[in-house]
Length: 266
Image (tube, rainbow, N blue to C red; front, side, top):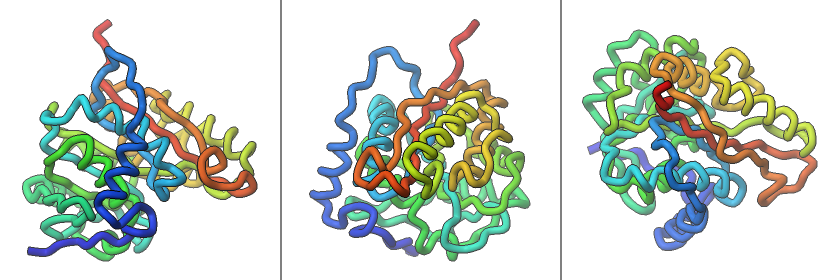
């Protein structure tokens, strides 16, 4: 059995199981208004938990209502560590975390490999943190599930949307896109840039998000194209930066939390 080992445990999040569970539980200590629509997809940040954990917790708190309903998670994020021509799926059988291994969904993997933009490329997953940091939040909120990890590189939004459509599924499947927002501007500049990017995401304006606006711009654009096809609306749940959490305000990274749900019938 091939296991993709945790690459950033002890760096981006605690490596000790008890401390990790405590960090995630603390981030999830968020009040969720009753009656909110259940998300089909979310967008969550992926920095170190001390920086982006509070924002991630806001959107992941919404997933607690889906525990026992979600059997499959399609997790897409940017490929930071290796050049990827389009979309890379892992060849591993499971992804390890300090609080348990997550099995890869082989059926979904075979399904996406029918698309010409998808390849098996473990180089893209070996040290990639954008997907890994989401797993403890998913485990603590959903419990058991199978995973399809997608590292998105130089991919067209239509290709990403088509790949997501192949595994969109029904109420048993959750789509998660991992992305931070602007990088290394001063606090005020980041606020303005991230507000503009968040507005484009909420409007479903895939082409209104430039590569410099978010490190996961490509998977976000693909998700928004797919969301339009499936008539999902987008809600902004939280928007802040490392200047609001654990960093200084001279050089910040932006974080946003978004939930995508079916629109109410008109």
